[in-house]
Amino acid sequence: MKNTCVKFRKQRATALIVAIFTIFSFGGISTIQANPVTQKILLSQINWETKISEAGKFNVVLPEGERETRTQSMAIAGQSVDWEVLKVKTESGVYSVSYTDLTPEIIELGANAVIDSIKDTLVNEFNWSAIQGRGRVISVQGYPGREIVGSKNDRVSVLRLILADQRLYAVMSTADNLGNIGKFFESFAVNPWQPYIFEEGGFQVNLPLSPSNGTNSVKLAGKMFDWQVIESHNLTAPEDSYAVGYTDVSQEDLKNGANALIQSVGESLMEQLQLKTIIDNGRKISLGENEGLAFVGINEAGQIVGVHFYLVGQRLYGVSAISDDLINISKFINSFQIQ
Image 1 (cartoon, one colour):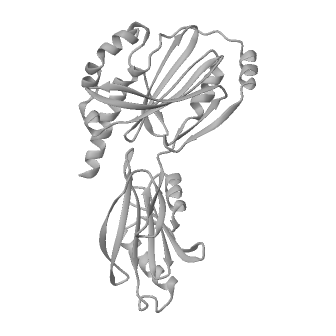
Image 2: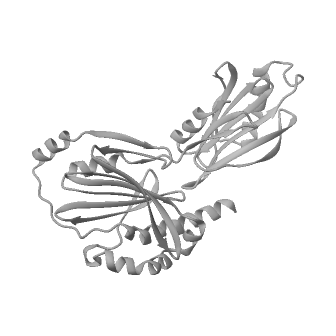
Image 3: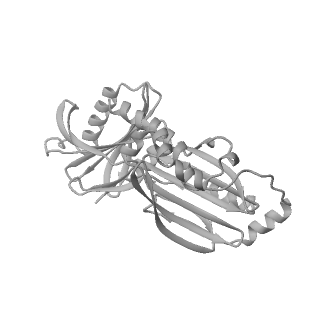
């Protein structure tokens, strides 16, 4: 039921992009003529630097120029929405990244209600005849978006709206050099994964969304273990799971050694998951000075299931990921740290 709700909200939020692209205005498309040799020289003359925004959860390459950061408010359906704006202006163009977090109430309104609420803004700021439709449907790192292309003062203008979970990004450039515009847009990357510290559990891990937590009793290796579990999902792939569980074990559990305990627990878990294929069934790993074993397999849905078990003192950690994206699995498991 939880996954169904997530999918529904994603569909509504994706439609909402079409409505809010009107916040940033420019004119219609026109023919641009350029000498490719000149373009290459102009591109090389600009100094570029990478901007990593921890608050914005993105990184982008920006040219050196007059930089401005500000908060810009706009009412959507009667609700004031604040955009965080980063803007760089050079002699040859403007480059900006803005973002805002949409509330569930705004997402649930749907596109039509949002358009109606800001139609006066559309009339005043936009030349509708200059825009062909509502923008080309695009995907950036698997996130849904729209791209609108036009021109203003004989310069190309491009706006990309990207919805990454509940965060809406507006990436825009107006410049006289196609190469510079391309470099700017190609460099933009969303980094929704953030570190979470769990003091009670004594660990830190990177997650794509805020996790849930609870207690789960599981019978492994013939014994019932009470696990404290935190779990996160990915809004663009709700079937993915990223979880850390931990439980304290006794000296009796460790009578045959740490590896024997982890091996029996890991094999028991893999059997319960009913994996179609088992790749690793207890490969030795370590986390600093702490012993561990890795278990990897493929489930019936074709997803990769990766679980790393570590014994730290008398606390057993299980770091597990289920996804068809190997990079996300690696990103999650490798981020796990003991505090």
